[in-house]
View (tube, rainbow, N blue to C red):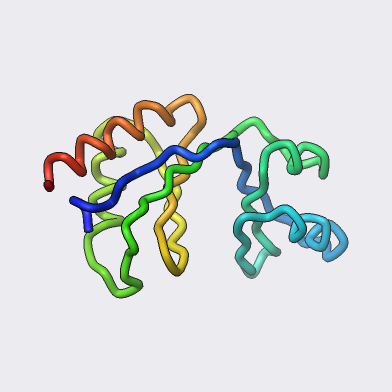
Length: 126
């Protein structure tokens, strides 16, 4: 999977946020690109401009890098390889595994370096 991951930096900036308020959660669902129900409340991944409009703290904007390989839900090693190479570059990442692809969220300022590191990783496994 690593040799075929084809990482692509997507347009936009995103915010991870959470709320225990059902009214706020309803407003978040309209724009969310991801959500998860946790014991403390509902967590959302929102476009930064929508998060700002809803009053969330937006000082940690993230960029999305999509790994365009069709990742298997039972695949082993892709997440570990991505996290390891980014950690070696001192770049934090938040992985979101969806049905078709994995998505890597990195701090906006680190996005170009993260993409370069992932492309290097892919070439090393080609």
